[in-house]
Length: 588
Image 1 (cartoon, one colour):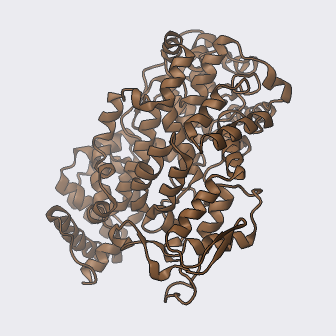
Image 2 (cartoon, rainbow, N blue to C red):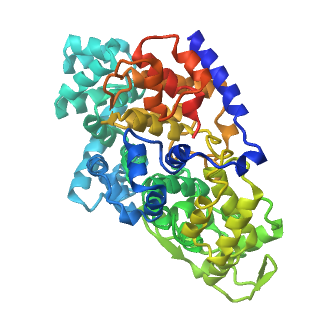
């Protein structure tokens, strides 16, 4: 443990020191480092064989394919892992019907909401209603002897002992062996504080059953987070996946706010993914009209003067503010508080039809502020309707401030925290000239000398999501269940789809560099190398000298600092863990 703490402290110092100066952006990378740089920045990390494949294709052809993901056949491994995740293929209304919240079940039980139309969903809700009543009776009995008695009626003594004190693998085996009837009985017998660990310890197919019985919306969240991890690890369209993550954070929505637990599936699939290499104006409108964004920033309730309802106070400026500050012009974009208010007025009436029934975008003209507005010096005449908001999107999407803000954020993601101003200026010009064509902006960046410079090489620190995905890819591990990986990423500080603030997760290094976080990364790396991460299978690390093992994971020679650390042990799995927890592996 002392060594791990020391290693984490050294890693902080090394990562903080890894900043680039201006001269470094004028020094060209050698050819072999260019290939590794492309794999580090434009994928979730190289896998065994990727360097040779890129050398065979050539950098130019490989990058062009990544910029046109529709040309790349998708991985069969990915398709196999996504197939069981049923919720990904449902629209929002179907999700609400098939994965009802406990509140919805109570409303149905109290006669305040109708049973689902679908026969299977109706039967499931009836079962949940009956079991809720049974649970309430069990919860009222907190006596430990009564609990022990209930468990003895369901399980054998040795099974109870295993669930209390067995290893994760032993617990999974016990749960997997239970019949569906026994599983239901066990779940109902346990109090909530014990039911959670039972769900966490279960094998994937059993866990899904338990989630559906206990907290159906969590099954939707589990499918989403698993799918995101599977795509990052197995997709052949790696740049598209990285851009999906980038743009989701740019237009962030918090999963755990009300109906957004159901809306995010559609939001990512239809508002974000199709537009990551398209026109920025299309992406902006898709997010503006998405029920997920409308609900998250409360614009669905925003009304003009004289239209305030019982549950709102009229005009809501949340979306207007974030549209200007985060989504388009940036905090230094030159707008004023008056502009925020005027933009908010333009979007009054942009709402959701029957939000708690999975309805889509709905413009309510009765709620719209019909007065004249002035946005960034442009007069929008009185008497308008939904087109007032469309005009705002036109104004901000073509603003030079927006072009610069988007270009800067992309350069921070892919080049360096403080990218050369000359590069950002060129990207800004391409953005404006191309009408906000994001593929063209990306091409300008990827064709630049700055991207292929010494200053950009290893200048970025991986986020927790990137670190975990890259470790799985580097070791060629087989992920049978993404649940533990998702929890691990959350422990490292980046719970997937759960960034509360509209800012999304940060692109800059400082957010992710501290001793505690890097110690957590080291612990994960050591567990992975030792094949001790539940749901992930890793072949034993082949015996060999420390340098060979390190090169197999870094795809390059280790630094002197990392070599000094790994040469202190002869155990291959420890060497591999130390390499993946080292500053060398944390950089990309």
